[in-house]
Every structure is written in C-alpha cells, then in structure tokens.
Length: 584
Image 1: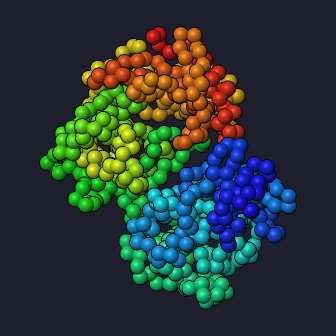
Image 2: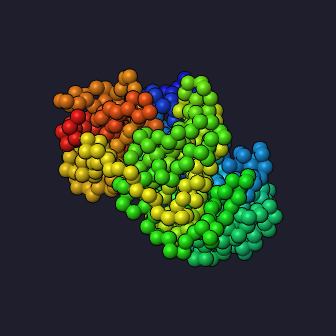
C-alpha cells in the first residue's frame, strides 16, 4: 500500500497508528511537498470523520494537532492532518511506565491550554485520555482525535453515555448527563493521574468498562501514591461536582506552578509570530533550581517600597540595553552588547565562545506585551523569572512579568546552530535584568531614533488605509510593543507589518519586485508564519564593523487559503507602503 495515492495527491508511506484513533498513515502531500498524517474512516464512522474535520477546521492551537482537509477516495473518507513525530502518551506509559510529577505537569499545562482554546470557542472534546495525547521528543504535547468532539450547544441536546472512555469519564457523564467543559477538565485530571500513577482513576482497565463506570457513578477514586507536588492540583481537577472544578484556563495556571513554567500564550486569532510569547500568570514564588535563581526578589534594604508600578513608561523610549550587563558572561567567553539587531524593542549580548568564525551565541532581551494580558501582575520590587519549557540544547527562554502588565523576554540561539547549553547564558542575563527592574523603572534611551530610521516610524500608521483592500473589510490595528509591529485581522485574513534590523546578506531571498527607488522580495514563509512575506530593504548601516540593514517585513496569511495564494496581496501591500517610508 506504500505506493498508493489518495485522492490523486497524497502518497501513503507508513502506517503509524491504529486502534482508538482509527488507522493513521504517514503520507506526502505531493502538491505542497510536505509530510502529513492521513486518518482513514472505519466502516460506519465516516460521519465521525466529517465531524472531526469540521471541529478541527474551526480550531487552531499549537497544542492541538491541526486538521488540514477531509478528502474522499473511492468509498473511504480520509482526514488530512498535521504530522507530528511522536508517541501517544498511552504508548509512553505502556513502554516506559509512569512519569515524574514534573514531566506530567508540563504535559498538563499544554493540554489545559488546548482545552481552554476549545472551550472559548464553545467546543468540548469529550474523550481526553492518554491515547489521544501525542508527545514529541522535545516535550511538546498535542491533543488529537476530535472525532467525538462537538460544539457545546449540540452536546447539551443529547443524553446518555454515548461519549468518552470509561477509565477517564467524568462522574456526571457516567450518570448519563451531557458533556460540558467541566467534564473535559475532569478527563484532563484523569489523564494526568494515569500518567503519574500508572493506572486509571477508576481502577485498572482489566476489571472491565462496566466496573469502571460503576466506580465513576459512585465516585470511588483510586488513591494517589506517586503524584507528590501534583496531588493538590489533581484533587481540584477531579472534584465530583462540575461546579467545583477549575476552568481549563485556571487548570493551566495551577499546573504551571507545579511545573515551574510559564502558562502558554493564548494566541490571537490567526496570529503567527516569530516571537515565542509567554506569560507569567501565577503568584511569585522563590524557586532555586540547580543553584540558579529563577524567582528573584531584592532584599528589603535594596528594594524601595515606593518603587513605581510603571516599569516601562513610554515604550518607544525605554532602553532594553539598560537591563544588560555583559560582564555576567565574561567567564563564558567574550561578550559585547549590540543594540542594533532585531526589532527596536530588543538588545543583545553577542558572546564569542572561541576564535572560530561564527562561534557566537546571541542572548537577546526583548520588551514585549503579553497576549492575553497578565492575569496577575507582580508587585514592584518582587519580580519573578518564569521558565518557558523546551529543550535547552535547542532553545532557552525566560520571562519576567512586570507590574505594569508588560514583560521582559530573554532567549538565546547560536548563530551557526552549533551545540550550546543555552540556559547557561540566558539565566545570568535574566537574573541581572530582574535585579535592575526590582530597583526601579527601565532607564530611557540615550538618544532618540534618527529621522531616517524605521525606529521613528509607527507600523500601525504605516499600514493605515493601505491594509483595508487586502483585508477586504475594516479592521482595527493591533499594535505590538512600541508600535514597531502591528497586526490587522478581518474574518479569515491577517496582515502583520514589522520592522527588523539584521545582518546584511549578499543575496536577498524571494522574488525581486521593483518598487521605483526600492525593491521588495516576495516569498512564502511557512515555518513559524504560514504566510506570504514581502520584505522591503530600507536603510543599510554599519554596527561594530558589520554590514546591517533595516527592513520592513509584511506578512499576509489566510485561515483557509494556502500561503502561496496570498503573495499577490503581499506584493500589492508592499507597493502601497514603499512610498510612505522615509527617503533613502
């Protein structure tokens, strides 16, 4: 079957799943040249596949497996989905046994964030269990199998236990009541219980489904023996009465405290950003990990009780470089501060690790606006550094929520992609920034931006009325920190205009489009954006002997259409914006 084409487009390659999730194959989309997962309908379940396609089409979240399409091939209906190299949580538990409370909490934060997005859209999953959770090697967890998920208003019209899996079902569903968001929260708790304890909350599956359902109706829970610090959160998620359970959003916050990570950002509609925005939404605590301070608080003698709550002040004059001290890294290499790379809200320490050309780590600090707004703002002088989960060999990120609702984001990368323990560089930089912020507001920039630089321009004003024809309707601008980046959304279309400063390349990527005195370069950017980009080089300059350039980046994306179809709109927008830029 490995040579079979589905719907004349998808070439089957390898069977990767079967059982509760149906039969799933890895396949290649020959039109777009990408790897996908194909799920084939079983006998009698084509309606379920159609329902899964409809639900998936209305749901876009980094912790939910994306549904691209549903296609017919003869008598079979196939669901076209995102391919994630991973194992199901059920397979992990069968092979490796129960996981540590910390690992389970990190998985739980992601699943709770996915459920919160579903519930915000009026959806309920109705069958959350380890078999429907995929976990990648880097710890990314994604919810899958929306086959019995429904819109909540549809679910309320039914009755009887026609949904869910007995080992993970909420008590009210076992009693025949309709599924709601609270039932999903219970199933989340039951899934995490199984992950840390190694058994269902309603007892071992070998006892049979009717025994488990009976235990569910009588609320006879298995005791917790290995949950440790996770036990109080599981107790909240597994409460008998639906009204007593936290919402999925609150569950993410509670789990984040146990995992010592930031709550995943709730994405704007269709927003696809290069920035990995994370928010700290729980109370500050003092946490020491491996001798490094992750939650910092100045001693009473250093932190003034009269510190202002407005840490940032005027966003366009706040100086991110004032939060950096290169000497905190002097034992690890040769550091220098670079204020001319990235967006205008950023400043970097470039750490040369060895004389080899390109052996440099870029530790970047950015001032950002969290989205959604911080649910709990820290007090001045008592700031907490929050860890963003991830593989420290690939990336390391830290976030400092600020009393005024803004945040500081610190992250690192090796510019050549070489092996590096990135958190060794990020942690001392972040700790220093927190100590500065605990003593007062961010200092101002030493000088305003020059008239010819993009730093003096407002991205929202630059887009202005030029964006309306692309969106085919009105939309209010949604500014990012300092208005050096701005979003517009209207129905299925999103436009993003952002400014960048980067090292100049000998050759620009994309198709060259002449714009009078300037050029634009248009290309599809799928990784991280899934959009068509038009980039306008603006102003070349030099920094520390390096050739640099300021650019205007324009991204146009659509909820349904492939990014290739948005390149015409991106080019038209570039033509409209270019004359409004400062003269060269």
